[in-house]
Structure formats: C-alpha cells, structure tokens
Length: 311
Image 1 (cartoon, rainbow, N blue to C red):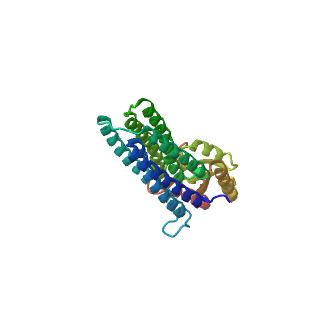
Image 2 (cartoon, rainbow, N blue to C red):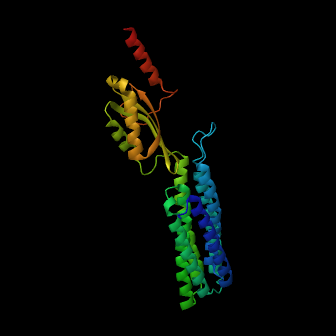
Image 3 (cartoon, one colour):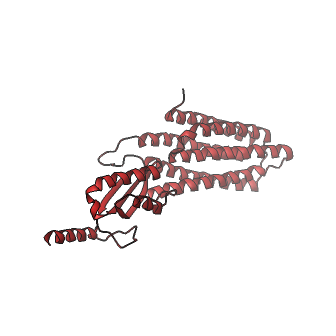
C-alpha cells in the first residue's frame, strides 16, 4: 500500500536518523571533518523533518475567527527557521575547516568513503520518497537538505578515494568548505522564497500584466486596478482588485464575476479572490493605484449617481 504524506515524513525521519548515526560514528573513527560536517547538517534535517510534520498538520487546520486565513503560513515560518539553522551550521563548518587546514589530521579514506556511500544511497531514497510532496514549500525546503546531503556525500566519497590513493588529507577540510558553500546557497534560496511570501510579494512565476490582459478579455470588463496578488502559503494564492465594468453590463455583474474568478483560478492558480466592481476608475493606466483616505473615487461615483438620479 502506498505511503500517505505523514507516512513519507515518518520514513524520511527514521532514515535520516540512520544517516546521522552512520556519519557521526564513521566520522569520529575516520577523523573526517567532512563526514562530521555533514552529520551536523543531518541534525538540522531531523529538526526540520519534525517541524515540517508539525507545519503540514497545522496547514490542514480550519480557519477561525482570529485566523481567518487558517494556518497555511506555519509552513513558511518553518522554512524560515530552517534557513536560519542552515546558516548557523555553515558558520560552524567553516570555522572548523579553517582550523583543520592550519593543523591537518590523519583521515581514514576507506571508512570515510564507505560511510558516505551508504549515506548517499539513503539520501537518494528519501528524495525519491518525498518527491510527490514537493509542491509544498515546507517539503521543498526539506528536499533542499536532502539533496544537499546527497551532493555532500558524493563529494565525501570522492575525497575518501583521493586520500586512499594519495594520502593528501587537506582534501577533507576543503570538501567541508565546499559542503558549507552548497548548504549556504540552498539556505539562501529557501530564505528568499519564505521572505517573499511573508512580504506578500507577487508569486515569481506570475506576471500581473498577463492577469490583467486575461481579465479584460471577459465581455463587459473595461479595466482592472488596485490589483494585489500574493501567496497565503506555498500552495495557495490570493488576489484582490477593483474591476471597472461597462454601464450597460451592470445587471450582469454576477455573471462577469463568475467568469473572472474562473479565469484567474484555472489560468493562474488563484483560488481566493476579492473583487470590487466600479463604474469609475483611477487615473488611466494606474494599475496599482491606492487612494488616500480610503477610496475617495467611490465617493465621486456615488455623487455622480445621485446627480443623475436628481436630474
């Protein structure tokens, strides 16, 4: 029977703990900083796995009166913590690698290679197991760890073989610095994605101009302004906008609204929309206009409507 989401996370946790045990014991016995460095990275993997399982469960909780969007951003906070933990690990690895370069230590290349090869095989299996869940940013940040472990293990295998063949032990701390660089780059990508969502930036794969063009294709729509598009979580998008429609189509407002919602949901994956109809707009072409003191142009519309009714 195929594993469900929680089952995959639990399996990844158990296998990651196995990697930690193998690398830590072998790293100490082989005096390999590269193995111990990757074991330190694996410690954060275990913590992130636990946090990821927690975040995924929280995201399924229903909305409440105080949290009307639910708990979808718990996963984003976990991804942010993940990136910060990775940064701390990088700093520790760099400090120890510099010390090892200054004071080289004997390293057993054979044990180093065998342990890293086993860790590589387990990491690849974990990545394959979690692949169906990769659409979620929480899991994607976890996969960054896993692929980082796989890349690091590959480098450690090569380093162990170099030590076996040549006896050149400085390759061990040099590999540790390379692993630190890989981890730092991965952490930066996760951090950037999490910060973008927290700042309610437009999703990077979505062009607002394309959204506007698609919406304007709906009969009766004249323009779109006061447009905001953001991510509630890694798999949920929202949009708010003011929609200017033709005077002759006001009676068909609900039909227009349904068609607009269908377009933004199916073409752009925006399923939560808040759209306000208007018959007057901001300055021509001002897509992101924000009116001071609320929306005085609405008052202008009301005044024009009253004058027409009285005339």
